[in-house]
Amino acid sequence: MKKFIKWIASGWMLILFFVGFFLFWEYSIPLFDIPRYILPSPSEIVLKGSADLDKLIYYTGVTALETVLGYIIALILGVGFGIAISFSSILRRTLYPFFVSIEMTPKIAFAPLFISWFGFGLMPKVIIVVLVCFFPIVLNAILAFNSLSNELTLFYQSTGASRLKTFFTIRLPAALPQCFVGFKYAAINATVGATIAEFIGSDKGLGFYISIVTGNMRPDLAFAGIFFLTVLGLTVFGFVTMMEKILIPWHISMKRINK
Amino acid sequence: MKNFIEVTELKKVFGDGEDEVHAFGPATININAGEFVSILGPSGCGKSTLMLMVAGLLDSTSGKVEFENKLVNGPKTDIGIMFQDNTLVPWRTVKGNIELQLELRGLNLKDYQEQINNILKSVNLDDFADRYPNELSGGMQQRAAFCQAMIHDPKIILLDEPLGKLDAMTREKIRADFQKLWMVKKPTVIFVTHSIEEAVQLSNRVILITPRPGKIDREINIDLPYPRDLKIKRSPKFTEYVNSIQEVFHKYGVI
Ligand SMILES: Nc1ncnc2c1ncn2[C@@H]1O[C@H](COP(=O)(O)OP(=O)(O)OP(=O)(O)O)[C@@H](O)[C@H]1O
Ligand SMILES: [Mg+2]
Image (cartoon, rainbow over all chains, first blue to last red; front, side, top):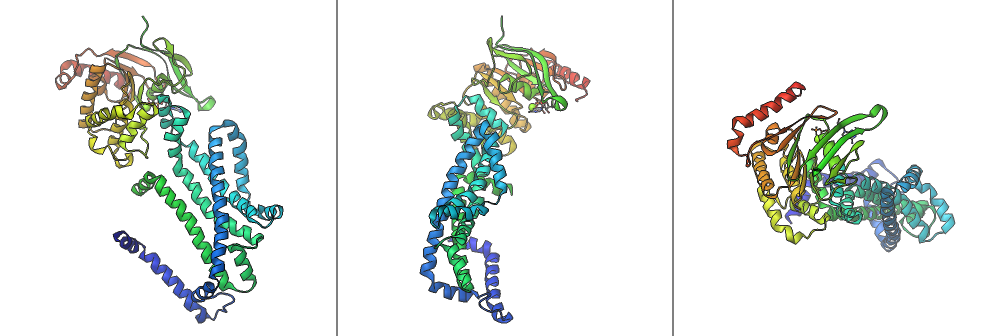
């Protein structure tokens, strides 16, 4: 309870800002005579959106599945390749520059191709999410596993510990903070990837919903869809941030003290 | 008779071409088992470089290091080494960091709990066993790193300015404790330091290194009885040793 009060106390400016923002939005619509098919008011979005609630919830589930599935696959692949590249000099000279150069291409540009190859189903969306999430994860993982301090490297060498043991007791925990930089960046990208994939070709999901209702001149419903997307994005990001707090509490507290 | 540690014409050059830095040597050093040898020299003369080569953690450019006639050609693991920058990991407490040494060596943590408590007490860190390194001062971190380097009771100890960040009083206490430990267990110690007084107080022999590229200027046997307590530190002979070393470095213009 105390914590909650403290939280409110520290966040009151932000809360005030949001309240002000929505009030301004609500009352500037009649004030400036903005037609509802251009920009609906927040109250109308809530009203019309709740009539479509069943659909919105179902579509949120669809998009969430694509997002989470793609994110998890990207996580496994990204960390796996990251470790492999960090520990193999051959891969570091071949795969690593390859990944770096692909990183420059906007992955989302592949989306129409994947849709045409794999159709309208779940798979092409998952592949696109994997594609947009994989690179930040793998590149940060490579950075993470290569940045162990010289002293620590020498230290474990002087103990004669096996590679496997040093990996789990030193290299992995030392790499986690930098890995999470990639995980969080990818978590932001994940919903974006899923949404755009749905824009391009699908018959369900929030991206599909938003593009259909926009075509039908229903910006109120589009905003309702955007709201659900935001909640989904925040949930994914919040979950990753929570994992960071659980897995590397020492890193969080270190940052706090350094401030 | 061969010596316990033989460093022969050891030399290190970093980089090549224009970036070449001649960091150390060539120098020859012999050390007996159970001897306490200090390495004294100005900053940048290659003391840390020498220590890493002796530990087999850095390849030499030429020359060799031998322990009991056995050539060092990879990391030596039967040692306790404390680096100039501490090797505490931020995700473990002070105690956890000490245990890290034991875990990496596959030793049983249960057998060492008492030793851990004792060594923490001896450096006045017993109240901080469960704190994380970032909650400690620089000097406290250094003391924790000292414990980490010593907990497995090594017979060969390499220390790179282990007490450099400590206040005068704590430093005095740890010196005394370390001397006691050395007198009992007689490990072979190579001790890198910037403090002339510390070198004279602790060592059988002090090796003076010239400015970079470090070569051996001279070796001075410190012929004073142990334990070297306050009385000995105040003796004219002690002061004489300190003064003669100061003169050498004065000659090089580093003091
Ligand atoms: N990895 C490295 N690459 C290139 N040059 C290096 C490297 N390590 C040390 N040097 C150089 O070698 C020289 C000796 O360095 P070293 O760290 O051994 O000195 P030191 O005597 O320990 O100094 P200090 O007392 O300041 O710790 C320095 O000039 C340094 O710049
Ligand atoms: Mg040094």
